[in-house]
Amino acid sequence: MPLLTRPSDKSGSTPAQICGEIAQVFQMRATEVGLLQLSKGVLTFLFPVELGAAGAIPISSSAIAARTAVSRRAEIFNDFAKIKHHTVFERIKIGDEANYNPQPIQKLMSSPIIGADGMVLGVLQISRRGLTPAAAGPNFEAQDLRKLELVANELAELMSQMTDSNVSKRRLTFLSV
Figure (cartoon, one colour):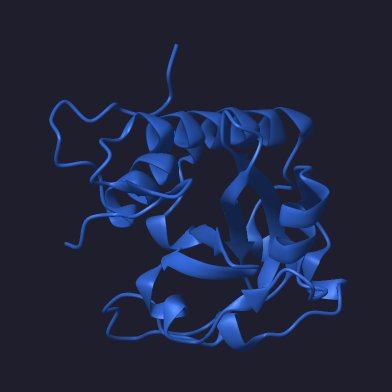
């Protein structure tokens, strides 16, 4: 049974709509979902949109998202805060929360989005934030990772089923909001 809703018309889906659905699947806030698109050797954030303005991630970098795209493997990082990483994306205000208080990512799951033709289209990530690992919530388990892989597969399928006007050279071009 599909976890994501299939668009019923030709208008497609926006990254925010898709990530909102993904957040519901995992019972999380949409801001805890990251959707990156791979194009020309660089990953860019499609959601949250605020992270897209912070820059792109070359797949040659040591970033987890780049590692996921290159290895084509889904992984769990329940000790993400201990892994050496750039924190620029963690400090950016997401949404319009009045009392925004950035908290570090403590736990992360990352899965490649692989098209039917075997091309990596992007990366889907789910994170748990908090001042401590305990405050961030429970550890991700193997069944959570399997669910993330299923959602990434459905997302790849949605991308491939979009009309030609929404797909450009093996990558999804989302409609603007």
